[in-house]
Length: 415
Image: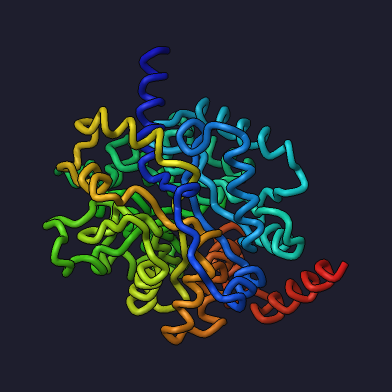
């Protein structure tokens, strides 16, 4: 029991390394026009956030999401599990989140379809909650649990977080030379995910594993999209003067991003500083966030790009642990070096997204383009995977749906 608790603690702390500064992050000046645009647009973020590493007090969660709602952000994909979390860990985490949210029940909508996201946008004072798992270890070796995860609201899941697990090798494992790739067990999980409408998330897995999953999806489930929920492009930083020879092991190649787009999926860069190889800024700027978006748009097209922040709360507990246990992170010192250079944070959406909007307008992006990037592309994939409705078979056009949502949103605001 003590051994399992230690493993879970280490997993949480390692997972917490992608929980970047929120309370400490900078609020960037933006035009009133941009602020209004964010408020009027369906915006879906992504953050990693297990209790105990991401947040330790109920107030942390409420404060963060109150800021998010005030900025007009519709909802977030929120991670409940990662690394070696078991089913029991997942249940405890799920209960902890729900109990905390039940303190203010009118402010949350638990998403089972895109209509729930639209409802959150119409109401304006609620957050759409999409659950995510950054590990498949939570099924405890029982494929039948995948169906249960779907019923509990898991919208997306990746197989192997960072290290080597039964399902396959993560990004750090492959960085250190492991060539396991995706296993037969991992592909069996993928089959269950497709069957039950859970999105296959490829972030934080090694390229051998990732390409193995994509090969399996393309062969057996053509037309079913897969995604990178929070991954930076290696190509954006490879020519930086200070770039490391291998780049950041969590970042993905152009070829991986292109394959996700060809499947009909999307790629969301995460506004996370320590992964910005060769730059490692003290405060990520709206311009740098726009660079990430722009790189992917030019690579795969505006219909296949989203956003993620991967942030939450405070870095202090994580930074203290890393300082004392730097040898635990076998990445040739990459992450600790980046932290030492000041790259300990990321851009909280509520504080940076309006300024990013101004920057994208400067670069010639239309309102329609930005709406796709902030939420529209995710909504398309959600509808296709969760509800089995491909865009070409959707009886309600995107413009008709948007008119409906905005019509009732305006009526709600008037009241």
